[in-house]
Image (cartoon, rainbow, N blue to C red; front, side, top):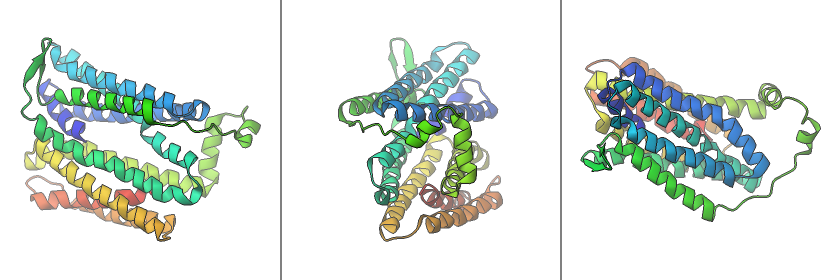
Length: 318
């Protein structure tokens, strides 16, 4: 979220349009989408450490390439560097689902929902803190080896540093789990795995329904993340810092929601009730977006539907 709000300013500063900004956000998500099945398959075959280390290395490289964008005098080359950096970052971000897969393999079924909610809450701590960095980076102005570091491309250096810290932590602290042998998988190993996965999604509601709710969760989150910066700029004249405050408030609410989901799960509330509650609140939030996102709208009317959606996201991800 911190990077997406800074991206808008970075792209426009380099000569790109709002369409280019939207494309860069979309290509980041598309790269993550393409890489997730391969990282998942890799973790099934060789455990979690190797795919984690590889994907985090891509994120480090992506942050560095993103930071180098302004070093190019040609605007097209500069924007291309931003695109490449975000593609590499998206490929690295594909590891965001590995933590949930790790929990699913390490814990018994009765502990997975509550622990998954807790893990999601921990992710939200990072998302709550990240937008605040835009305020601290607003005064950055120095040079490194001829590269001018400013509030926009400094985000890339920050991302690279944080992913290096993550690499070190994973290498030294993450214990490997025993690789399970799935006899059912061996029986069908000659079949196309993608067709087997699609068949499970369609035929098995215990897989298909969570699949659709996770799809809804990710679609809605990326819709907000992609649309809020240009919409806030158009409707309210906001820049990256103001947008970051909204992302920060969203992340705090999502973290709070995750703790509520964790508590409700411990109290015996079914996943069915949690998911339906999230879908209902999410529908209210997006109806609010439809009626309140227009030029010269009051700030509270613009922000309130976004925050309502943020409350629903933990329940959709349950």
